[in-house]
Image 1 (cartoon, rainbow, N blue to C red):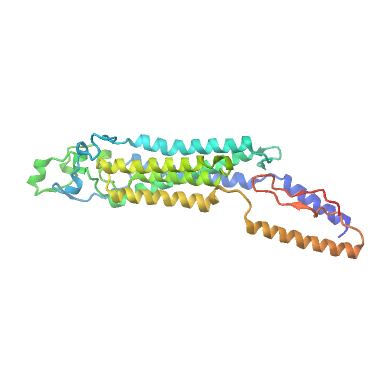
Image 2 (cartoon, rainbow, N blue to C red):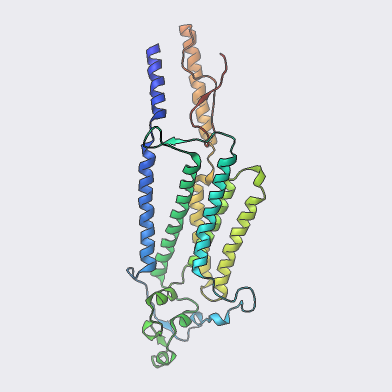
Length: 346
């Protein structure tokens, strides 16, 4: 290989490293469009009656829908009232986001290695690692939460399962129901608010159980995958147990007051846990940015092949080439991704 070819190769590699990564901007824009579409669909399902609801008839003497909140199993204990959905949604969204923000800022502030940056749009426009990781983790979490809510709400519309306290929620007209042979429909409900009737007819699966379990499993995967420091050995299981217990208590409250069947809660837990595990394991790869062992071995093998080729060229030409391919170390994924030469004299 001549000196001109070597210089052109080195110049091409340098230009490639300095070029801005426009693909990041394109994919980020497309992902934002997808996220906005999912959020829009969820808002339409939850706040409007555009999508039809399965309205199955019922019996006014059916004991499975005759539960009363005033006769909760937890009266006189810790839970004697319903847990508002606004609190469940707020905690399920805000607590994981706060943990992710605190964890990423902590890693950025106390990391010893130089953080990796990427160029977008122009050469001087750099995005630090902490911003890149925050956008990815927060974006995936919010996307998964709204995908979960869309799936749960669509399932509710398709099944139309009555809640255990359906008769109490719809304020059934018992006189009209008896005159109709205990056969009931929505026309016999004194409650005329369409959204209240929709809520009473959408028991399966439990949204509170699904969303709380999703947040618990997602944040548990995050603290065990991203926070790998030896100084947080107790903090990681503490956060995991705390979120899982809060999620379990949320489901028990709904079961105790008669707002959901036990099968609704079990299905909600299973759905939320599955989506959280899928996103954490296969989309974010366990929140671990270390280079995989197979990839490291492949790169080492490539370097050894190039080393043998250089030794053969040195024997044939009698002079060492000027390509800096000797003495390289493989960087970790969260540091600078360029190969850095080690000063080793041949």
